[in-house]
Image (cartoon, rainbow, N blue to C red):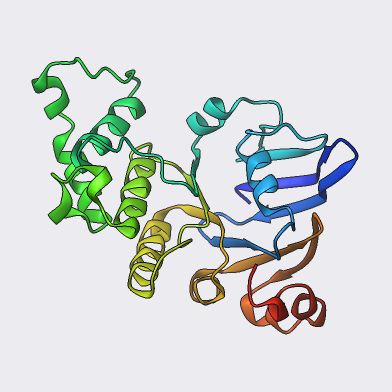
Length: 247
């Protein structure tokens, strides 16, 4: 297992958002976290990436206890999150966005004033990442000009620039049309070829096509776990989730 939680719990002023969640993510798989609205998926994600501190419980990554670590420390270990709301520099080009992410990954700060020759040394790898996410023809576009689905692809490229061992995706296809959904789903499949992916995702078609393992949350607890065939046949899952038509 690359990522494990034991009794993970988060309470907010008497309300328990995540309640005793035990999660095991196998290395080299795509693992989906699904459930109805208010199930605790986002809170669980925030706990895993250390944007929230658990009330109780334990998180281990590659066998190391990361429960008390800061978000930046967790990212340096290779556990990196891509946010639901696109987080790129809007008035910089696609190439510049990826180049800055590469610069940060290699230990530099965001030195916008560095010489062109220094920044250009990142170009080859940046262009490779841009090609990997299908943005070669958009390399010189400003991020703000990109269609929504392409902007999400850029965000994944900047995340990949950090060379994560495990990638956490927060609703990667949210707000997309069919064409963009298909494109991002194929991108996730390619990304997962040599790393582990844990994603929160509403789109059941995407979940069924991509996921090796699915964990269903409801009211902060794990309701069921298994492959898509197993969880979709579970009567409790159908009642809590499938019948609602949305997550």
